[in-house]
Image: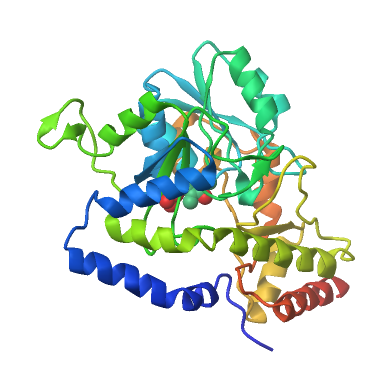
Length: 369
Ligand SMILES: *Cc1c(COP(=O)(O)O)cnc(C)c1O
C-alpha cells in the first residue's frame, strides 16, 4: 500500500515549475523587491478574479483581518461576532485591535456560523460580524448581510479557506464591507511563503489600507497615521500571479476528489460526510468527516501511513490564550462536539482516485471491526 501524505504540493508545483522560475528570475534581475509592479499586477488580477473593485496585497491572512478591522475603526470597547469553531487567527485579529470576540455557534450541517443565532449575540457594543467560509464552503451571506444592515454592523469575510466559492452565485470575499484572505502555502491559492490580501468595493477603505500596510505613508517619509509594515513582497506577488491562472482548474479537481470520497464513504453508517448548502459552492480546502470514533480512526489511518489532521482540536473559547474571557467547557457545545469528532482527510489537486479508494477501504474496514 502506498504512503499517502495529508497534503502534497508536488503535482501542482511540478506543472508550473518553469513559470515560477521565470517569475523568480525576472525579479532577481530587476533588483526591486518591495511594492513594485508585480504587487500592482497581482492586485489587479486578484481583484478581477474576485470581482471586487480593489484588492490590496498584505503580509498574511491574520494581518489582512487585523488591517480590515483597523480600517473600519473597530477597537477597544467594541464587540465583534465570530464563529465558535473557527481557526484561531480570526479571533486573534479581533484581539489585536483591542475588541472582544463574541462567539456564535455554527450550523450543524454546514459547519458555518448559524445566521439564526447571530441576533441573540448582538449588544449595543457590537460593531461587526466576521463570517468564516470554513473548509471552503461559502456562508449564508444574504442572511448575514441582512442582519448587519438591520443593526448597522460591518461585515468582514474571512475568506482564507475559500477563494472562488460562491453563495447564490456571488463570490466569497465580495459580500462584506472589507474582506480578508490568506495565501499561506497550504491554502487553495498559496504563495511560497506568507502572503495575504484584502478585497473591498470601497475606495476609501482600500486607500486607508494601502497606507496602513506601509508605515502609514502614501509618500515615502511622510507619515499620515501610525501604520505597520504588512506588505506583500514582489516575489510572492509574482508567484501568486502564476498560480492564480490555475486556481479554477485546481478547485474543480478538489471538487472531483470530494465527490470520489462521497461515493466511497456514503455507505459507512458511522461517518458524517460534508454537507453543502443548496445555495453555496464548496471549494474543499479541506475534506472533513465526523465520527464519534475519531481518535481511534485517526490512529488506524496513521498505522496505514495515511496523513490526517484535525481542524481544529480545541475551539478558541477553550484555548489557554483566551482564559481571560472566562469561558468553560460546555459554553459552546456544538463547537466542542466538532472539535472532538472532526477529521480531515488528504486532499490536493492531482490526488488520484486510487488514493481515495485506498483511504476509503481503510475507513470501511475500521468500522467493520
Ligand atoms: C489560514 C487562516 C487564517 C490566517 O492566515 P495566515 O496567512 O496563516 O495568517 C485566517 N483565517 C482562517 C480561517 C484561516 O484558515
